Amino acid sequence: MIRLPNGLLLCMLSWALLAGAQIELAKNYVCTDDFCDNYRENSQCDTLKTACRAQNSTHNGILFPSATPCSCCQTCVENLLPGADCSVGGLGYPVPAGICGPGLFCKVAEGDEHPTCQPMQESSTCYTAQKEYDDQRQAGLIGHLMQRPTCDGDGNYQSVRCIPGQTCFCVDEEGNRIFGEAVNTANIQISMRCECSRLAAKARKLLNSQYPVLTSRCDSKGSFDQLQCVDDMCVCVDMHTGQPTSDLRNVTKGVSILPCFDKRMHENFTYLRDCENVKLAQIYDIVQFAESDFNVLEFDRDVCQPDGFYDRIQLHPTDGYKYCADKDGAQIESFQAPVNTRLAATMTCKCARARKLLLDSKSLEVPECCPNGNYKSLACRRGECYCVDEDGTQVGIERPEKDKQNLPCYNGGDYCPLAG
Ligand SMILES: *[C@@H]1O[C@H](CO)[C@@H](O)[C@H](O)[C@H]1NC(C)=O
Ligand SMILES: *[C@@H]1O[C@H](CO)[C@@H](O)[C@H](O)[C@H]1NC(C)=O
Ligand SMILES: *[C@@H]1O[C@H](CO)[C@@H](O)[C@H](O)[C@H]1NC(C)=O
Image 1 (cartoon, protein in one colour):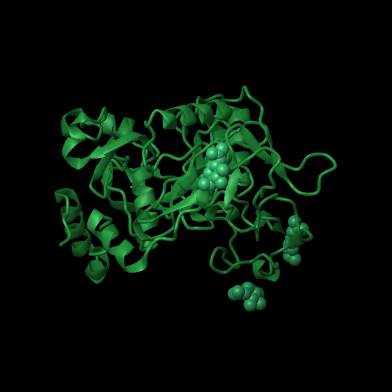
Image 2 (image 1 turned 120 degrees about the vertical axis):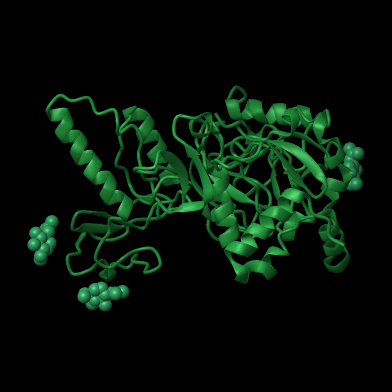
Protein backbone atom coordinates (compact mmCIF):
# COMPACT_ATOMS: atom_id res chain seq x y z
CA MET A 1 0.00 0.00 0.00
CA ILE A 2 1.33 3.41 -0.90
CA ARG A 3 0.18 6.28 1.28
CA LEU A 4 -0.09 9.68 -0.33
CA PRO A 5 -0.35 13.06 1.30
CA ASN A 6 -3.38 14.90 -0.16
CA GLY A 7 -1.32 17.54 -1.91
CA LEU A 8 0.68 14.98 -3.79
CA LEU A 9 -2.41 13.17 -4.96
CA LEU A 10 -3.98 16.39 -6.26
CA CYS A 11 -0.78 17.24 -7.94
CA MET A 12 -0.62 13.85 -9.59
CA LEU A 13 -4.20 14.23 -10.80
CA SER A 14 -3.43 17.51 -12.47
CA TRP A 15 -0.42 16.01 -14.20
CA ALA A 16 -2.58 13.18 -15.40
CA LEU A 17 -5.02 15.69 -16.84
CA LEU A 18 -2.24 17.69 -18.41
CA ALA A 19 -0.40 14.74 -19.82
CA GLY A 20 -2.38 11.55 -20.11
CA ALA A 21 0.63 9.67 -21.37
CA GLN A 22 2.48 10.35 -18.16
CA ILE A 23 -0.06 8.68 -15.90
CA GLU A 24 1.95 5.52 -15.56
CA LEU A 25 5.01 7.54 -14.81
CA ALA A 26 3.19 9.74 -12.29
CA LYS A 27 2.46 6.72 -10.13
CA ASN A 28 6.14 6.46 -9.53
CA TYR A 29 6.63 9.98 -8.24
CA VAL A 30 6.22 8.78 -4.71
CA CYS A 31 9.27 8.69 -2.55
CA THR A 32 7.45 7.32 0.45
CA ASP A 33 8.83 5.25 3.30
CA ASP A 34 7.17 2.20 1.78
CA PHE A 35 8.80 2.84 -1.54
CA CYS A 36 12.21 2.90 0.14
CA ASP A 37 11.51 -0.11 2.36
CA ASN A 38 10.61 -2.02 -0.78
CA TYR A 39 13.58 -0.72 -2.67
CA ARG A 40 16.02 -1.67 0.07
CA GLU A 41 14.46 -5.11 0.36
CA ASN A 42 14.69 -5.81 -3.35
CA SER A 43 17.87 -4.01 -4.34
CA GLN A 44 19.90 -3.89 -1.11
CA CYS A 45 22.06 -0.89 -0.32
CA ASP A 46 25.84 -1.27 -0.40
CA THR A 47 27.44 -1.86 3.00
CA LEU A 48 28.73 1.41 4.48
CA LYS A 49 32.47 1.88 4.60
CA THR A 50 34.33 1.37 7.88
CA ALA A 51 34.83 5.11 8.36
CA CYS A 52 31.12 5.81 8.65
CA ARG A 53 30.51 2.82 10.88
CA ALA A 54 33.41 3.65 13.26
CA GLN A 55 33.02 7.46 13.55
CA ASN A 56 35.98 7.70 15.95
CA SER A 57 38.87 10.18 15.95
CA THR A 58 40.84 8.44 13.19
CA HIS A 59 38.10 6.88 11.09
CA ASN A 60 35.12 9.09 10.35
CA GLY A 61 33.02 10.19 7.43
CA ILE A 62 29.90 11.92 6.25
CA LEU A 63 26.78 10.10 5.13
CA PHE A 64 25.20 11.36 1.95
CA PRO A 65 21.96 10.23 0.37
CA SER A 66 23.25 8.16 -2.54
CA ALA A 67 22.36 8.32 -6.22
CA THR A 68 19.72 5.59 -5.91
CA PRO A 69 16.01 6.10 -6.72
CA CYS A 70 14.53 8.47 -4.12
CA SER A 71 17.98 8.38 -2.45
CA CYS A 72 16.77 5.37 -0.49
CA CYS A 73 20.35 4.30 0.30
CA GLN A 74 23.18 6.22 1.89
CA THR A 75 26.76 6.47 0.81
CA CYS A 76 29.82 7.18 2.94
CA VAL A 77 32.33 9.83 1.99
CA GLU A 78 35.34 9.33 4.21
CA ASN A 79 36.99 12.29 5.94
CA LEU A 80 40.64 12.25 4.96
CA LEU A 81 43.35 13.18 7.46
CA PRO A 82 46.00 15.93 7.00
CA GLY A 83 48.58 14.89 4.41
CA ALA A 84 46.40 12.17 2.87
CA ASP A 85 46.20 11.93 -0.94
CA CYS A 86 43.06 13.49 -2.30
CA SER A 87 41.46 14.25 -5.64
CA VAL A 88 40.73 17.81 -6.75
CA GLY A 89 38.18 16.48 -9.20
CA GLY A 90 38.06 17.19 -12.89
CA LEU A 91 36.86 15.55 -16.06
CA GLY A 92 37.62 11.86 -16.06
CA TYR A 93 38.20 11.67 -12.32
CA PRO A 94 36.06 9.25 -10.39
CA VAL A 95 33.66 10.59 -7.77
CA PRO A 96 35.81 10.90 -4.64
CA ALA A 97 35.43 8.19 -2.02
CA GLY A 98 36.93 10.55 0.52
CA ILE A 99 37.16 14.29 1.00
CA CYS A 100 39.54 16.28 3.15
CA GLY A 101 38.23 16.37 6.73
CA PRO A 102 37.17 19.42 8.77
CA GLY A 103 39.43 22.44 8.28
CA LEU A 104 41.34 20.82 5.42
CA PHE A 105 41.22 21.24 1.65
CA CYS A 106 42.75 19.42 -1.29
CA LYS A 107 45.81 21.16 -2.73
CA VAL A 108 48.97 20.40 -4.71
CA ALA A 109 51.76 21.67 -2.44
CA GLU A 110 55.02 23.01 -3.88
CA GLY A 111 57.38 20.20 -4.82
CA ASP A 112 54.55 17.66 -4.62
CA GLU A 113 53.19 15.73 -7.55
CA HIS A 114 49.81 14.72 -6.14
CA PRO A 115 47.33 16.82 -4.22
CA THR A 116 47.09 16.19 -0.48
CA CYS A 117 44.84 17.43 2.34
CA GLN A 118 46.16 20.64 3.91
CA PRO A 119 44.90 23.17 6.45
CA MET A 120 42.58 25.85 5.12
CA GLN A 121 42.52 29.57 5.85
CA GLU A 122 40.73 29.81 9.14
CA SER A 123 38.93 33.12 8.86
CA SER A 124 36.91 32.68 5.68
CA THR A 125 33.10 32.65 5.61
CA CYS A 126 33.01 29.20 4.07
CA TYR A 127 35.35 27.79 6.68
CA THR A 128 33.28 29.39 9.42
CA ALA A 129 30.12 27.91 7.92
CA GLN A 130 31.80 24.52 7.82
CA LYS A 131 32.72 24.75 11.49
CA GLU A 132 29.20 25.82 12.35
CA TYR A 133 27.87 22.82 10.44
CA ASP A 134 30.22 20.46 12.29
CA ASP A 135 29.20 21.93 15.66
CA GLN A 136 25.53 21.58 14.80
CA ARG A 137 26.10 18.03 13.70
CA GLN A 138 27.65 17.25 17.07
CA ALA A 139 24.55 18.76 18.67
CA GLY A 140 22.28 16.62 16.47
CA LEU A 141 20.80 19.62 14.69
CA ILE A 142 21.65 18.64 11.12
CA GLY A 143 18.90 17.21 8.92
CA HIS A 144 19.18 14.31 6.46
CA LEU A 145 19.41 16.50 3.38
CA MET A 146 21.66 19.23 4.77
CA GLN A 147 25.03 19.14 3.10
CA ARG A 148 28.25 20.30 4.64
CA PRO A 149 29.51 23.46 2.89
CA THR A 150 32.48 22.70 0.64
CA CYS A 151 35.22 25.32 0.43
CA ASP A 152 38.07 25.84 -2.01
CA GLY A 153 41.71 26.49 -1.13
CA ASP A 154 41.13 30.21 -0.59
CA GLY A 155 38.33 29.51 1.82
CA ASN A 156 35.65 30.49 -0.70
CA TYR A 157 32.57 28.42 -1.35
CA GLN A 158 32.93 25.81 -4.05
CA SER A 159 30.84 26.61 -7.06
CA VAL A 160 28.16 23.90 -6.89
CA ARG A 161 25.57 23.11 -4.23
CA CYS A 162 23.24 20.14 -4.52
CA ILE A 163 19.89 19.11 -3.13
CA PRO A 164 19.93 15.32 -2.75
CA GLY A 165 17.53 13.67 -5.18
CA GLN A 166 16.69 16.98 -6.86
CA THR A 167 18.95 19.54 -8.53
CA CYS A 168 22.43 21.06 -8.25
CA PHE A 169 22.94 24.79 -8.77
CA CYS A 170 25.79 27.29 -9.01
CA VAL A 171 26.77 29.57 -6.13
CA ASP A 172 29.19 32.49 -6.02
CA GLU A 173 32.26 32.66 -3.80
CA GLU A 174 30.15 33.85 -0.86
CA GLY A 175 27.76 30.93 -1.31
CA ASN A 176 24.88 32.91 -2.86
CA ARG A 177 22.95 31.20 -5.61
CA ILE A 178 23.67 32.36 -9.16
CA PHE A 179 22.68 31.16 -12.65
CA GLY A 180 23.19 27.49 -13.61
CA GLU A 181 21.20 24.40 -12.61
CA ALA A 182 21.12 20.71 -13.53
CA VAL A 183 19.52 17.50 -12.34
CA ASN A 184 21.55 16.01 -9.49
CA THR A 185 23.09 12.90 -10.99
CA ALA A 186 25.96 10.79 -9.70
CA ASN A 187 28.72 12.56 -11.64
CA ILE A 188 27.32 16.05 -11.93
CA GLN A 189 29.85 17.72 -9.63
CA ILE A 190 32.63 16.60 -11.92
CA SER A 191 31.34 18.23 -15.10
CA MET A 192 29.55 21.17 -13.48
CA ARG A 193 31.88 23.90 -12.28
CA CYS A 194 30.04 27.14 -13.04
CA GLU A 195 33.06 29.14 -14.27
CA CYS A 196 31.02 31.06 -16.87
CA SER A 197 28.19 31.73 -14.50
CA ARG A 198 30.57 33.09 -11.85
CA LEU A 199 32.12 35.35 -14.45
CA ALA A 200 28.71 36.67 -15.50
CA ALA A 201 27.75 37.29 -11.86
CA LYS A 202 31.02 39.13 -11.25
CA ALA A 203 30.59 41.27 -14.35
CA ARG A 204 27.14 42.28 -13.22
CA LYS A 205 28.41 43.12 -9.75
CA LEU A 206 31.49 45.03 -10.95
CA LEU A 207 29.56 47.08 -13.47
CA ASN A 208 26.94 47.52 -10.77
CA SER A 209 24.53 47.87 -13.60
CA GLN A 210 20.78 47.87 -13.37
CA TYR A 211 20.76 47.36 -17.14
CA PRO A 212 21.38 44.18 -19.10
CA VAL A 213 25.08 43.31 -19.31
CA LEU A 214 26.72 41.37 -22.14
CA THR A 215 29.22 38.65 -21.20
CA SER A 216 30.33 35.32 -22.64
CA ARG A 217 27.40 33.01 -23.22
CA CYS A 218 27.11 30.16 -20.73
CA ASP A 219 25.42 26.78 -21.08
CA SER A 220 22.55 25.77 -18.80
CA LYS A 221 24.93 24.29 -16.20
CA GLY A 222 26.94 27.50 -15.92
CA SER A 223 29.92 26.38 -18.03
CA PHE A 224 30.96 28.29 -21.14
CA ASP A 225 28.97 27.67 -24.31
CA GLN A 226 31.71 26.17 -26.47
CA LEU A 227 30.58 28.31 -29.38
CA GLN A 228 31.01 32.06 -28.89
CA CYS A 229 30.13 34.59 -31.60
CA VAL A 230 30.03 38.33 -32.07
CA ASP A 231 28.26 39.27 -35.30
CA ASP A 232 29.75 37.12 -38.10
CA MET A 233 32.83 36.12 -36.18
CA CYS A 234 32.86 32.94 -34.11
CA VAL A 235 35.37 30.95 -32.11
CA CYS A 236 35.31 27.69 -30.17
CA VAL A 237 36.27 27.86 -26.49
CA ASP A 238 36.98 25.42 -23.69
CA MET A 239 33.82 24.85 -21.62
CA HIS A 240 35.63 25.34 -18.30
CA THR A 241 38.26 27.99 -18.98
CA GLY A 242 36.56 29.95 -21.77
CA GLN A 243 39.92 30.00 -23.61
CA PRO A 244 39.76 29.78 -27.44
CA THR A 245 40.41 26.32 -28.89
CA SER A 246 40.05 27.33 -32.56
CA ASP A 247 40.75 30.23 -34.91
CA LEU A 248 38.32 33.08 -35.18
CA ARG A 249 36.15 32.31 -38.20
CA ASN A 250 33.79 34.30 -40.38
CA VAL A 251 30.63 32.16 -40.35
CA THR A 252 28.37 33.82 -42.93
CA LYS A 253 28.29 30.39 -44.63
CA GLY A 254 26.96 28.68 -41.45
CA VAL A 255 28.27 27.97 -37.98
CA SER A 256 28.36 24.23 -38.60
CA ILE A 257 31.87 24.50 -40.10
CA LEU A 258 33.23 24.95 -36.56
CA PRO A 259 34.20 21.82 -34.59
CA CYS A 260 32.24 22.96 -31.52
CA PHE A 261 28.95 23.30 -33.42
CA ASP A 262 26.40 21.13 -31.63
CA LYS A 263 23.11 20.77 -33.45
CA ARG A 264 21.25 20.07 -30.20
CA MET A 265 22.28 23.47 -28.87
CA HIS A 266 23.01 25.70 -31.85
CA GLU A 267 21.38 26.74 -35.07
CA ASN A 268 23.38 26.82 -38.27
CA PHE A 269 22.60 30.37 -39.32
CA THR A 270 21.55 32.33 -36.28
CA TYR A 271 23.78 32.39 -33.24
CA LEU A 272 21.64 34.79 -31.26
CA ARG A 273 18.71 33.31 -29.40
CA ASP A 274 15.24 34.79 -29.32
CA CYS A 275 15.82 36.34 -25.93
CA GLU A 276 19.22 37.73 -26.88
CA ASN A 277 17.62 39.57 -29.80
CA VAL A 278 15.06 41.08 -27.43
CA LYS A 279 17.85 42.05 -25.04
CA LEU A 280 19.98 43.61 -27.79
CA ALA A 281 17.00 45.67 -28.91
CA GLN A 282 16.60 46.84 -25.29
CA ILE A 283 20.27 47.76 -25.00
CA TYR A 284 19.95 49.66 -28.28
CA ASP A 285 16.92 51.54 -26.88
CA ILE A 286 18.74 52.29 -23.65
CA VAL A 287 21.64 53.82 -25.57
CA GLN A 288 19.20 55.91 -27.61
CA PHE A 289 17.34 57.09 -24.52
CA ALA A 290 20.52 57.81 -22.62
CA GLU A 291 21.83 59.91 -25.52
CA SER A 292 18.74 62.05 -25.32
CA ASP A 293 19.08 62.32 -21.51
CA PHE A 294 16.06 60.24 -20.60
CA ASN A 295 15.91 58.17 -17.50
CA VAL A 296 15.57 54.54 -18.51
CA LEU A 297 14.29 52.89 -15.37
CA GLU A 298 11.81 50.63 -17.09
CA PHE A 299 14.62 48.35 -18.21
CA ASP A 300 15.41 47.45 -14.66
CA ARG A 301 15.93 43.76 -15.26
CA ASP A 302 17.72 41.56 -17.71
CA VAL A 303 15.08 39.49 -19.54
CA CYS A 304 17.62 36.78 -20.37
CA GLN A 305 19.84 34.47 -18.38
CA PRO A 306 23.55 34.09 -19.13
CA ASP A 307 22.75 31.17 -21.46
CA GLY A 308 20.80 33.51 -23.73
CA PHE A 309 17.45 31.95 -22.90
CA TYR A 310 14.61 33.62 -21.03
CA ASP A 311 14.91 34.46 -17.34
CA ARG A 312 12.78 32.56 -14.81
CA ILE A 313 10.42 35.46 -14.13
CA GLN A 314 8.67 37.22 -17.00
CA LEU A 315 6.10 39.99 -17.07
CA HIS A 316 3.03 39.42 -19.21
CA PRO A 317 3.04 42.36 -21.64
CA THR A 318 -0.64 43.27 -21.29
CA ASP A 319 -2.47 41.26 -18.65
CA GLY A 320 -0.87 42.60 -15.48
CA TYR A 321 0.77 39.52 -14.07
CA LYS A 322 4.20 37.97 -13.76
CA TYR A 323 4.71 34.32 -14.55
CA CYS A 324 7.35 31.63 -14.23
CA ALA A 325 8.83 30.94 -17.64
CA ASP A 326 10.73 28.04 -19.13
CA LYS A 327 13.86 28.80 -21.10
CA ASP A 328 11.84 29.58 -24.22
CA GLY A 329 9.72 32.11 -22.35
CA ALA A 330 6.57 29.95 -22.11
CA GLN A 331 4.69 29.81 -18.81
CA ILE A 332 5.42 26.78 -16.61
CA GLU A 333 2.21 25.09 -15.45
CA SER A 334 0.05 27.79 -13.78
CA PHE A 335 2.75 29.56 -11.77
CA GLN A 336 1.98 33.28 -11.80
CA ALA A 337 1.17 36.29 -9.61
CA PRO A 338 -0.63 39.61 -10.22
CA VAL A 339 1.80 42.56 -10.39
CA ASN A 340 1.99 44.88 -7.36
CA THR A 341 1.13 42.10 -4.93
CA ARG A 342 3.28 40.46 -2.31
CA LEU A 343 3.12 37.24 -4.30
CA ALA A 344 4.78 39.01 -7.22
CA ALA A 345 7.27 40.92 -5.08
CA THR A 346 8.57 37.76 -3.44
CA MET A 347 8.40 35.64 -6.58
CA THR A 348 11.55 33.60 -7.40
CA CYS A 349 10.24 30.81 -9.70
CA LYS A 350 13.17 28.71 -8.47
CA CYS A 351 10.88 25.84 -7.52
CA ALA A 352 8.92 26.06 -10.78
CA ARG A 353 12.12 25.79 -12.82
CA ALA A 354 13.57 22.93 -10.76
CA ARG A 355 10.24 21.13 -10.98
CA LYS A 356 10.18 21.46 -14.76
CA LEU A 357 13.77 20.23 -15.03
CA LEU A 358 13.00 17.22 -12.83
CA LEU A 359 9.72 16.35 -14.58
CA ASP A 360 11.38 16.59 -17.99
CA SER A 361 14.09 14.20 -16.86
CA LYS A 362 11.50 11.82 -15.36
CA SER A 363 12.97 12.24 -11.89
CA LEU A 364 11.52 10.36 -8.95
CA GLU A 365 11.43 13.34 -6.61
CA VAL A 366 9.70 16.50 -7.68
CA PRO A 367 9.20 19.45 -5.33
CA GLU A 368 5.78 20.99 -4.72
CA CYS A 369 5.76 24.71 -5.35
CA CYS A 370 3.74 27.72 -4.23
CA PRO A 371 1.30 29.29 -6.74
CA ASN A 372 3.98 31.92 -7.50
CA GLY A 373 6.63 29.29 -8.25
CA ASN A 374 8.58 29.62 -4.97
CA TYR A 375 9.62 26.67 -2.86
CA LYS A 376 7.17 25.94 -0.06
CA SER A 377 8.81 26.77 3.25
CA LEU A 378 7.91 23.31 4.58
CA ALA A 379 8.45 20.08 2.67
CA CYS A 380 7.77 16.46 3.49
CA ARG A 381 9.53 13.40 2.21
CA ARG A 382 9.29 9.79 3.25
CA GLY A 383 7.10 10.53 6.25
CA GLU A 384 9.28 13.32 7.62
CA CYS A 385 8.94 17.08 7.27
CA TYR A 386 11.50 19.87 7.38
CA CYS A 387 11.95 23.57 6.68
CA VAL A 388 13.25 24.71 3.33
CA ASP A 389 14.97 27.94 2.28
CA GLU A 390 14.39 30.00 -0.87
CA ASP A 391 16.70 27.74 -2.88
CA GLY A 392 14.96 24.53 -1.82
CA THR A 393 17.66 23.39 0.61
CA GLN A 394 16.75 21.88 3.95
CA VAL A 395 17.24 24.09 7.01
CA GLY A 396 17.38 22.42 10.42
CA ILE A 397 16.38 19.02 11.60
CA GLU A 398 13.38 17.08 10.24
CA ARG A 399 10.39 15.86 12.27
CA PRO A 400 7.89 13.06 11.71
CA GLU A 401 4.95 14.24 9.62
CA LYS A 402 2.54 14.10 12.56
CA ASP A 403 4.73 16.59 14.50
CA LYS A 404 5.21 19.05 11.69
CA GLN A 405 3.37 21.82 13.56
CA ASN A 406 6.42 21.98 15.85
CA LEU A 407 8.69 23.07 13.00
CA PRO A 408 9.65 26.77 13.07
CA CYS A 409 8.38 27.18 9.48
CA TYR A 410 4.96 25.63 10.19
CA ASN A 411 3.21 29.03 10.30
CA GLY A 412 -0.30 27.68 10.89
CA GLY A 413 -0.03 25.50 7.79
CA ASP A 414 0.74 28.36 5.35
CA TYR A 415 3.93 27.51 3.51
CA CYS A 416 3.64 30.13 0.80
CA PRO A 417 3.66 33.94 0.76
CA LEU A 418 0.09 35.12 1.32
CA ALA A 419 -1.74 36.83 -1.52
CA GLY A 420 -2.37 40.56 -1.28
C1 LIG B 1 38.67 3.63 14.99
O1 LIG B 1 37.98 2.59 14.31
C2 LIG B 1 38.80 1.79 13.46
C3 LIG B 1 37.91 0.81 12.70
O2 LIG B 1 36.96 0.22 13.51
C4 LIG B 1 39.88 1.08 14.30
O3 LIG B 1 40.70 0.30 13.46
C5 LIG B 1 40.69 2.14 15.02
O4 LIG B 1 41.64 1.53 15.87
C6 LIG B 1 39.80 3.07 15.83
N1 LIG B 1 40.62 4.18 16.36
C7 LIG B 1 40.47 4.69 17.57
C8 LIG B 1 41.38 5.81 17.94
O5 LIG B 1 39.64 4.25 18.35
C1 LIG C 1 32.27 37.81 -43.45
O1 LIG C 1 32.06 37.39 -44.80
C2 LIG C 1 31.02 38.10 -45.48
C3 LIG C 1 30.79 37.44 -46.84
O2 LIG C 1 31.91 36.78 -47.30
C4 LIG C 1 31.42 39.57 -45.60
O3 LIG C 1 30.41 40.31 -46.26
C5 LIG C 1 31.61 40.13 -44.18
O4 LIG C 1 32.07 41.47 -44.24
C6 LIG C 1 32.63 39.30 -43.41
N1 LIG C 1 32.63 39.77 -42.02
C7 LIG C 1 33.74 40.10 -41.35
C8 LIG C 1 33.55 40.59 -39.95
O5 LIG C 1 34.84 40.01 -41.85
C1 LIG D 1 24.86 24.47 -42.46
O1 LIG D 1 24.85 25.24 -43.67
C2 LIG D 1 25.86 24.90 -44.62
C3 LIG D 1 25.79 25.87 -45.78
O2 LIG D 1 24.52 25.84 -46.40
C4 LIG D 1 25.67 23.44 -45.06
O3 LIG D 1 26.73 23.07 -45.94
C5 LIG D 1 25.69 22.54 -43.83
O4 LIG D 1 25.44 21.21 -44.21
C6 LIG D 1 24.67 23.00 -42.80
N1 LIG D 1 24.84 22.20 -41.60
C7 LIG D 1 23.82 21.72 -40.89
C8 LIG D 1 24.17 20.90 -39.68
O5 LIG D 1 22.66 21.93 -41.20
